[in-house]
Image (tube, rainbow, N blue to C red; front, side, top):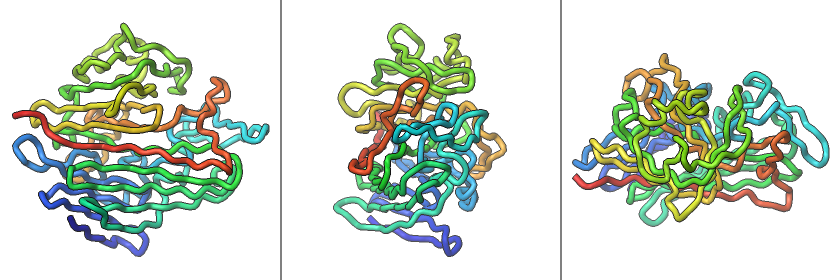
Length: 343
């Protein structure tokens, strides 16, 4: 394996990691983001399977959060309010009355420091960011790292590690958009999904996760593999609300908990994690004016995200799992592993 570093500006860099068979991961320190992932199909043809910007400088203003590491809090915080140390803190709002993905200047648009290390059959890039006390009104000085390790077996492992010097709220994820066809502007309705989950969180009209609902006997039950087309044509009120998935699913069962397959080219993605939740988002609001890495225009429903994370924080719904104490360490992992199905 080998890697190269390209300096687009003094601060903005990309790191290209290539396996001995030509598979490649392109990462950037802007948002600790995944820019490209080139993996083979069943015929050995390489294709890029993640949405990314044609111009890498767009990662400094990543409105679609393509491939970004999200923090301090992934997803939406209800009414932008948290309770820390018995005190209510009003965070800034950036989506109606709520806070989305940590607010302006969040981790996903910041420049991270990084180091590169060659390990056995893999290359690891360790991204680090220091978030001062009071950043977007979040308390505590937080030091967060995400180590992205691309290996010969075409797996990309993400290890999250963070500490705080005062009680705070922290919930980190990666926001990559996957399209296994390698044709990034085509819809993913012909992809099949297997998602091991017992319940999901229903959404209010403003997309705030509310109460748990069992997936059994609903259109949200993907415990057995089926086409994504079914959720796009579903008449379930939760599916029609957002025109697909944009819901937190509680994960169960043995790993990998998620399997995505494109049957025509034969690529498969398996997702393994020790996070309890994955927000599954089917690209319902993709900005179709965005030019992608391959020069094509982004399209609605052309990709799916698996945002592994903790449950979304909400005082109203008594979800506080993302509260982090100064004597605790935030440590989770997610693995995206690519392979192929039989010809």
